[in-house]
Image 1 (cartoon, one colour):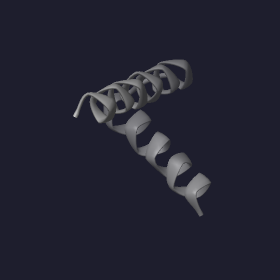
Image 2 (tube, one colour; image 1 turned 90 degrees about the vertical axis):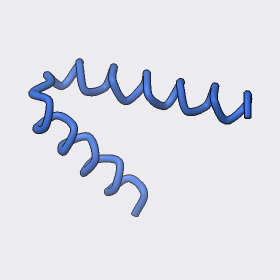
Image 3 (cartoon, one colour; image 1 turned 45 degrees about the vertical axis):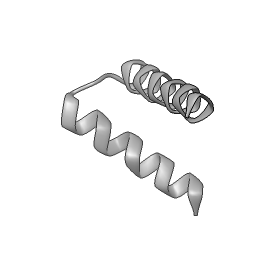
Image 4 (cartoon, one colour; image 1 turned 60 degrees about the vertical axis):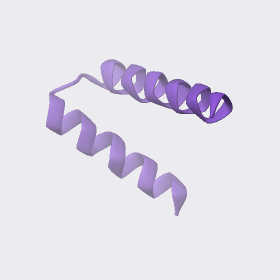
Length: 42
């Protein structure tokens, strides 16, 4: 079920911002990295 949510989220992000496949993956990776950093800081 989690993979379905990730895939759906990626499609929504891609459509909302007009990103290419590569740009979508980069944005998700950057946001996940930021979320991990802030989780450890707090």
